[in-house]
Length: 138
Image (cartoon, rainbow, N blue to C red; front, side):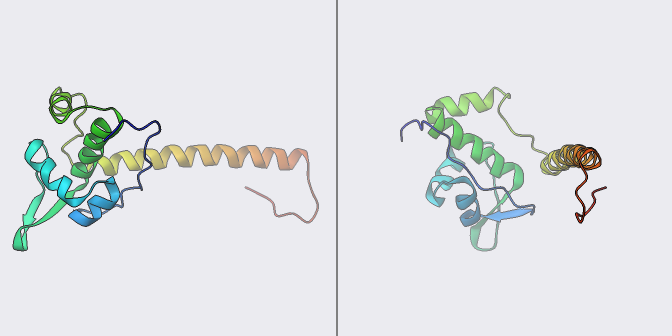
């Protein structure tokens, strides 16, 4: 693979506990056989295996796969280089699966604050420049 000039836009990760290999493949833009290979190369990647050896990935593993993909496909690292980079500790996602939920809650709080600020600006603008027959905000 070559280094991409612009990053590949990945879909948002749904809020669920486990993902099948097919779902992870779609979420991360990586084929299932590549995911299975990466399990052998990156010791941090350990999906739960259930019935018939089916793999189920948790949220933090999806984040790790996205980071591995970024290192390999976008930044041009070799597998060995990406493994070393992840081993440094700076790039490893938290192993706490609830951390992603807390991050999302924080982002939602920030978004709510920003939307309230925008609403307040619109209320102020509406009071300065009233238009008859319009719905009032606030």
